[in-house]
Length: 549
Image (tube, rainbow, N blue to C red; front, side):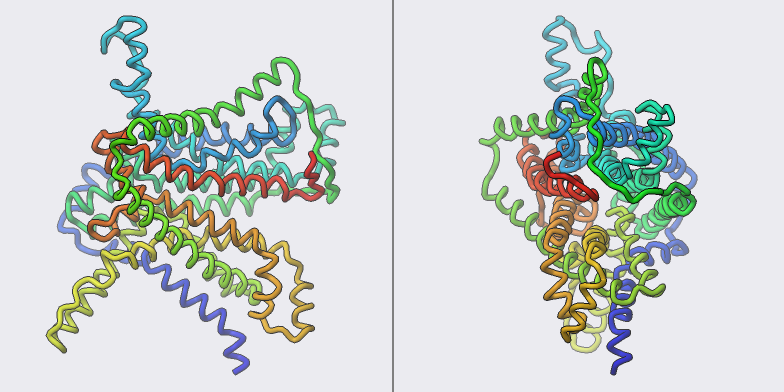
C-alpha cells in the first residue's frame, strides 16, 4: 500500500499525459493514412507556398518583436523619462487584443473605404488611383498586426530578466568605460539572452498558430491550408498530414529554444541586489525614448481600442442584446469551465512534481507542456479524429447489441471544445503555479510533516493559502486565452453555438466590421485587467524591490 501511495501521483500524471497527448499523437499517426491523392496534390501545388509564406511571416514578426520588446524593456527598467512609470505596465496592454481583432480594426480604418483614405481623398480632392497608399491586406500588414499584439511576450520576459540582473555587473561595465548603450548591448542583453529567446519562441509559435489574421488578409500559411484542406477538399487525412508538417516546425522551435538555453554560458557572478539605478534621460534622448516606448502602446492598443469603442457606440442600435447576451454567456461559461479545470489540474500536477521530482515525472510534465506549442487548428484536427472514431464505434456497438442509435456523444459537443482548450492551455496554468511553488521554501513542507500533516493536507492548508496570487493569475491567463481562441472553437463547436470570438470572425468576414466591434470590444475588456496584474507582479518580483521606486 505504501508503494502504491508513493507512486500514485507519478502514475496519475503519466496517464493524464497520455490522455492529453492523444490529439498530437493522432496527428503524427495520420501521416501514413491514404488521402486519395489530396496530399500529393498539396505537395505538387501549395505545400511550398505554405512553407514559404509561414517562414516569411515568422522572420518579419521575429525581427519586429525583438525591437519592440527588448529596447522598451530596458528603457523603462533602467532609465527615467516622462511617462516611464505608467509605460511599465501600459506596454503590456496590447496583449489583451487578439491579433485577428486588431487586423479587422486597422483594415476598417485604412482600407479604401475607410476613414483615413476617405480623409485623404476629400482633403486633397483626389480619386482612388490618383495616390499611393500601403496595402493593409498584405504580408507586411499581417507582420505588423501580429507584431503589435505579440511583442509583450518578449517585453515581459526581457523586463523580468533585466529586473533580476545584479546592479554590480552593470556598474563594473560602466567603470571599465562602457557607455550606457554599450553596457546594454554587451552586458545586459547577453545576460538576458535565455529569457529573450524564450519570449521569441513563444511569439513564433503564436505566429504559426494564428488563423484569423492570415485568413482575413488572404495569406497561404499552414493554418489556412489545414482549414481549407479539411473543409474545402473534405480530406481529414490530408489535413492531418499537413498538421504533422506544421508540428515539425513547432518541434524545431522548441528544440532551438532549449538548445539556446543549454548552450548559453552567461551567468550572474554577484548576489548583491539593490535598487536599480534611475538614469535620467535628457534632451533628445528623453524625447526619443518616450516616443519609441509610446508607439507600440498607441498603435497596438489605444488606437484600435478607441476605434472599437466608437464603432460599438455608433452601431449600438444594430445590436440584438438578447443574442449578444447569449454570446457573452457562451463565451464566459466556456472560459470559466476551462480555467477552473486547467487550474485544478495544473495545481495537482505542479505539486506532484514537487513531491516526486524524478526523471519520469519531469519527462511527463515536459510532454504535457508541448500542448501550448500546438496551434488550435492542429489540436482541433487531433481531437476530432479520435472522438469521431469513439462515437462511431460506440454507436455501431449499441446498434448491434440493443438496436439503439446513440449518434454523436463527444464530437460536435462542448466536451470536445473544452478538451481542446485543456490540451492547449493547461501548460499556461501549470507554469504559473510552478513559479509560485518555486518561491515556497522546502522547509515549509518539512514543518507541515513535523506536525503530522500528509502531502495533500500540506497542499490544502499551507501551499494554497500562500499561492492565492499565483492561482488567480493562472486562472485569469487561461480565462483570457480561451476567450481569444478562434480556430479550435470554430472547428469543434456544436451546431448553432456561437461565442464572441466566432461572431466577431463571422461579421468581419462579411465585411461588417463596425457591427463586429461590440463583441470584439468585450473580448478586449476582459483581457485588460489580467495583463496589468501580470505586469505589476513582475515589477514586484525583483530581489530588493522597493515599491516606492
